[in-house]
Amino acid sequence: MALGGFLRKLPYFFITLLVATTLMFFIVHNIPGDVTYVLADQIREEMGVTYEEALEIAYVMYLGFRPEEPLYKQYVDYLLNLLRGNLGYAYSFRMPVNDIVIQALPWTLLVLSLALVISFAIGVVLGLLIAWRRGGVLGPVVTAYAAFTDAMPDFITAMLLYIFLAVRLGLFPLKGAYDPDIVPGFHPAFILSVLHHAALPICAYVVEHIGLWALMMKGSATSTLEEDFVRAAVARGLPERRIMMSYVGRNAILPLVATLAIQLGTMLGGSTLVERVFSYPGIGYFFAEALMRRDYGLMQGLFFLIIAGIIGANLIVELIYPILDPRVRRETR
Image (cartoon, rainbow, N blue to C red; front, side, top):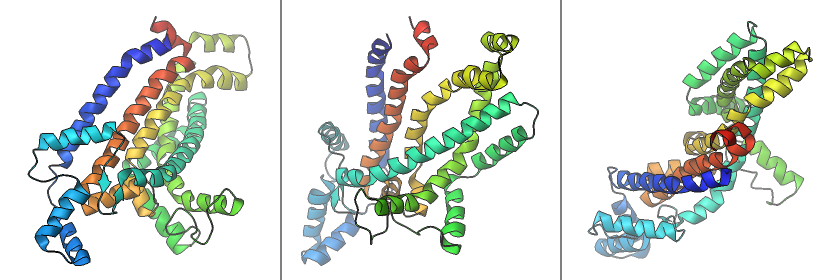
């Protein structure tokens, strides 16, 4: 039954992806500024050709279209390239966007997945404790912390961590994904170097998202505490720890588990400034470079990747949530 519901909703996700991609394409093509002429100047100096020839090379070889082509034709060509798995060409890096994604996406997924798991685990425990021990000191402290971190942008937290822990104290490296003196490979030195370089970006995300998960878990656990099966467990005299973990925690965590996939997609889109602060070579770093250099090809490709990631996360939730919560399967029958 869950698979049938998933298949019924699948066309709506593809329609959403098409609409979002269409909006993204026309918005990007209406961004002020044209760096084609800057690129033509570089080509003229490198190849020793006239400016008109350099401009022709820039349009045809690097941008993949002529400016006099109608926008709808460029749009159709862009969609056809997407269907072939071609995300475009990053002319500022002189390489296909697919190659940049293959190079950068693993680093972003490493940081985001570890940060999400750590912040989720800590936040769930805090939220459950707050809901169970209402009226304690922990509740107001965590609520104030969540309000503070929610009001503070991610990149501000990243900058503070970078300035104090990397620049002033020198406890962490200033940039990169690993030590360039270490040969990449599946060995302890390389793994430790990767984790050392990823520690500050991970910490920035964890600091920002612990409060969010704690408040979400608090709300879900508070609602679960009012359920009849919890009251029955209390009336039977079961130990508090068992009631809190097995009855309240296991049921209250279900909505949050489904939110994990959506949050991963959202964090993928919000990684731009954080990775830029740490010069961490993930998707966010290259997206920030695309914005600064007005690299529309790279911008479109990474925009599409982020859109597809968020929509795909919602699609995954539609598939797994009925498996996690049998009550949803009963309601959809």
